[in-house]
Length: 302
Image 1: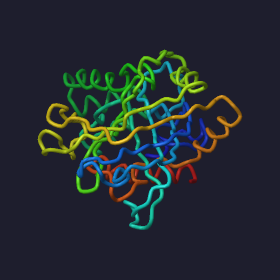
Image 2: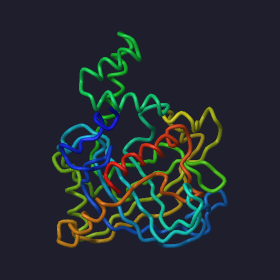
Image 3: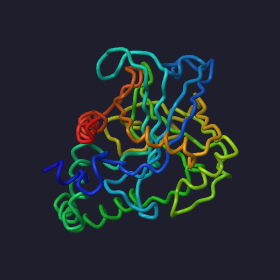
């Protein structure tokens, strides 16, 4: 039943559970800063170094829809050439995935809440209303609808101007953090609701694009909770610290080479658990994502 409701294989062919629609694929480079503070200089950020990377931009939904449709926007970053123990197997690992969205928090506090909501969304409007009323009561349902609308319908201008975050905590060596990327030249953005990557593709034909890679550190269970993914960590209590720069070099995504890259990236696995032990995902929702991503990959035949 779970597979029948959530996967759209008959309609779209085998594909991802969420973030099914890839909107752009790019090659990139992660440039780690040297001489970082000890709590930041962990894992792939331990020393100044450059790593090749690829990026998959996507819309977050179960379905393949127009960019005009309200949706969460994804930014999946695969860093290559790393070294360390796998968070899953303990064996040698040479890739590190960071999955980011245009939200600083997750849409649900715990995995069970998110899974129930996901099944309801996949079953249609009537099932969603029934789920929200059962969960929140008749009057509480209206507040839940408003909250959900703000999550899915959050205004998104451009990948050239929007911050994107892991939303959930991961390890950074002996510490816990959230990771975000922040555009360094937001003035380049030219929003296009019908094609949300159009301005990025245009800029990259003649100029590189850069983002600051920043970490926000856990301080305490109340201010920066790990098990409740719906709570935003206070920047006042835990300011963001820059640890690296993500550089997207000049490239033509519309060229034959760009289209070949897009086809290759679409076949790749992007998984928060495709990670080094030093950057192991943390918290209730992340533990559930381990199983959800595995099911998704099995559905795709990966």
